[in-house]
Image 1 (cartoon, rainbow, N blue to C red):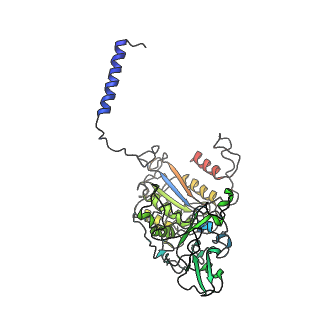
Image 2 (image 1 turned 90 degrees about the horizontal axis):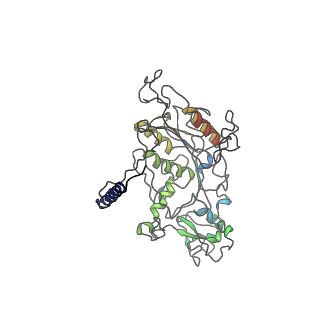
Image 3 (image 1 turned 45 degrees about the vertical axis):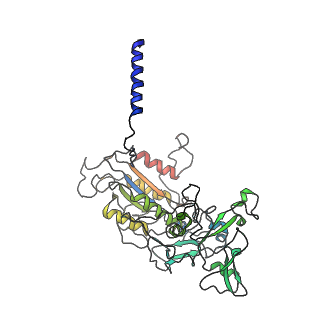
Length: 450
């Protein structure tokens, strides 16, 4: 369609005038309010969520990668040699260890209140402070620090808190006084030997590797004189690391503005938060889940399980006897995330035990099978708080969205599955593959049919 010259000019003038009016309008519009609920969710149909936490033995470890391990313990023995090097106590190599550039936010409980700990009396477990079989339950990190190798909590059997040995070259037994000492200047300059506090009498330097000293960590320093020039080898070269004794002035820039504020310089509280809430894989997972799930809308419907616990059986999710290593039995069945149900979730989360293997695929099948159920108290029951609301053809919403959140530290170890096979081999890249009985196969099966 052709427009006359006069009409085209008129339209152009209107567009220009409109643009100018918009540009001249004062910028008083309200800030953009971005929804925290995914836009593809139907607003008036709250979604179903199943959370699966990895409760395998490896989650008790305070190191990555797996330098040593035992499915039913942290490592085979205390002070395992592979955990002695400096680099294992540096986040440059071991991302679980304290990172001075990270702010470790205190987790929250079901009410949203932040959990607390202190540098002078840091909880071994910031979620449940009194621990059977583990004594003491707190340490003065200014004097009584030993790096944790892992903390093994379980509902039956002895619980344990195991340690890494200090690096041999950084501690010594001074023969003239038979006192254990540590070097506060590792990688920085001339050795500065300081006596360890407490019972530090010794007859050999190896004894000092298991004694208490001020809290510390190592930072990578490729400029050290003895650091290897082979870049690929530097990460595991102990000579490429400097020690930092945690103090009121030892901190680093944490907010990325290239300056170190007084609050950042004093990193003692930040270190205490890491120690009590983040220093093992399991503690860090609990902290992350506590913060992430607190803000869930109260209408969101949540169920939960462990890989090896808090489940009906190896093949069923729902149980009225969900229990951590120390907690009353509660129901893990799906309900709106509020009130008693939210309290029960946090009670279980804070007391989740960690032992045994990693049957990830079995857990994912349980979640998929649970989402496949219908009827009263099923994930599709529109009124989970009142009985008798489901009848033939009513009381259920099949359009409800389902989500499975699986938090894990490693690959699956469960045995061969049946009824899964290769579900996605016909899909185009990058979704399809030729593997069979994989996590992707399980996920695709239930995504397709549920």
